Image (cartoon, rainbow, N blue to C red; front, side, top):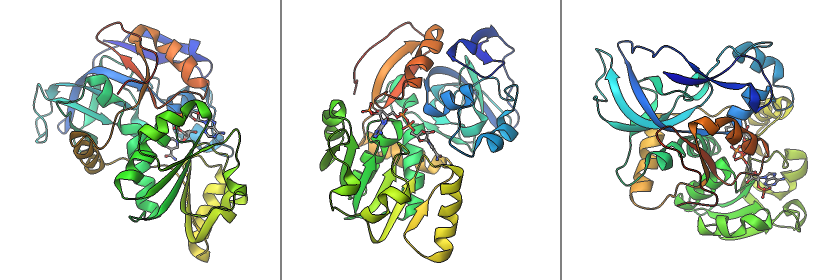
Length: 333
Ligand SMILES: NC(=O)c1ccc[n+]([C@@H]2O[C@H](COP(=O)([O-])OP(=O)(O)OC[C@H]3O[C@@H](n4cnc5c(N)ncnc54)[C@H](OP(=O)(O)O)[C@@H]3O)[C@@H](O)[C@H]2O)c1
């Protein structure tokens, strides 16, 4: 099968298409023919070994210091089950599925091996493969952080960095949880975040939300510009700060904040569960959640898609189609 491999850390040019052997499923695994995958901020971090402050050593232990330990990137995909292990009960050959395999990666390939109990579910018929592939990374991160922060209906939530993959998901999940949502983004993305249901929008190029006197039950920071030192005074007395992008010191103080019972900080890696993907599928089927796709690239164009994602300016998600050659600019719902 064809796969994009990287054998050293660096710019998008380290990604090379190669022929590798197709994996064979173990007892509890399924083999999925990948129809679409994505380029996430995490793929770009891992490719370039560009980690949040303090995390370089830890990530080296898992992903390698000099040479990548997991040479095929890509954490989410949508496709069709082509083989099942002898003890698989949740899926059958021919099922259209989508999902995410977190730190196992391996989705930049024509076939992806995944455990049946990983975050993988049947694809709703209403979604294309590229729409389905764009969902798990942002949404599962948002759902996991809101669960850890104990989001309640009626609470006031501010999402800083509302136009990226996690931000567009966080806005939609918070709206669906009954929260009143303030989205912080640049003026170019105002219409996008409004279309996702935000009640208020703050343009960070003209207004600093930490200085406008408003307070929130929950602040979600996906941009890394709202650590506790800056945004703590914008939290209500029992408010929580969800640091999706956090340095190691901020992550450690999130654990300490629980001990000292102050404003609670939530940080650290999100974990993905198939139950959360089922919840998301339900929202999509009831048209309460929209996939947000910025650009679509062909498989051959994957390095270009990495270069675009490296810019830090993508809106929602960047999708790679493996089956045909198409490229679309703009937002596609
Ligand atoms: N803890 C975890 O488990 C976890 C999981 C997923 C992701 N993450 C981390 O979370 C971060 C966000 O991920 P992502 O995938 O959502 O990134 P992304 O899609 O690449 O985010 C791009 C968006 O960020 C916006 N942005 C850039 N600078 C901003 C600023 N100063 N203020 C507000 N918005 C800004 C950009 O909008 P403009 O062009 O308008 O500025 C753009 O729309 C990444 O660093 C990633 O590593 C952590």
